[in-house]
Image (cartoon, helix red, strand yellow):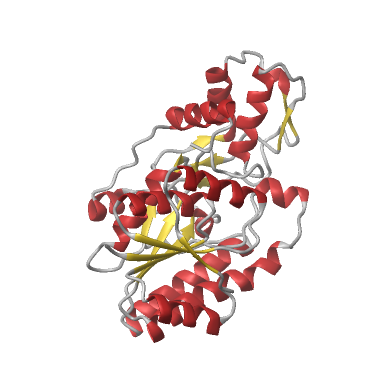
Length: 329
């Protein structure tokens, strides 16, 4: 039995990791902000219904002493740092509690604190940090691959690049087993409503139940590499189990537009007139061609022996079914 620490345990990825690691017989510890917000509380209850009852710890990830004290106390075998302040494109458009620039420093500091705490107080701990395809959002090469220079176009992407640089430093200079999982778009019924995939699925489910409200989207041209979040959680556990740390891209290698997502979902939902019921705020192609954020998973396939198991259509069908049932999957 391993002792595991998950930050962001009641997010989409953390919840799947908690399920997987519990099923393997490990002791799962989680860091969660208390009191839990509505979506996190619902995920907590959902995990409990499945017999997943992690040991929870209150810890301010932006306070170095608090993080160091937690790792010194727990001495975890593996730590998955998933917690981050993040706003989807939909949330960014609508505005929110914090500006994007205000999220940069907390995201960098929390990653730094986890790495320094492990190096100082629990050096045997293997660290896996969640990266993002937004680290390549300005890339001119597609698909993106390990070794391609990072090209972020957002504060969120910049923060993820900074944490990846820190991980490399702690790996090379401090001997820490630290890896970065560069996660491309990974979706599930556990997404919050401000992500475009969940917004599409929820809007189409309402249409098939007879509601007349249109589905409003920014544009249909953006290209994403969409996979199933649970597959990516499994890959992260394999990264934590490797004898040597390594940064890896986790992706499907296939790009789809937002329009293809809507069309596929509408077909599965039996909505033939979806084009008449979707309002696009920016119907023309943008002046700057959208970056094809598609990842090359060849290295992960070879190093981990991992494959994504759920196809694009299967992912959408699963999300639609869970939406109809009011389930988190």
